[in-house]
Image: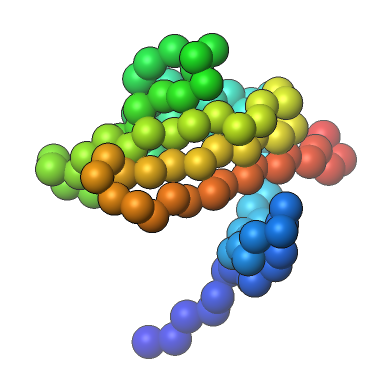
Length: 108
């Protein structure tokens, strides 16, 4: 079996990062909704609960098994519909994940 890497190593905001580029046949507002609206996000990866206006939500993967714990997602920056910067941490663990979503509309 062979596989082709879909990510690349880059530096973003001073952090070593794995970047993934994806192209969707949808407008930028539709893609933004798919990653920020709870019911849309739950269709493909997981669910979040809480009030994002507080600066954080609880996120739980839906397809990783029933015992997958919720993670705290802290919203560092939100510029709808183009940029979302988050950190996540599993309760009781020291590891913090930094995530940046940047959306660019190309030819509609």
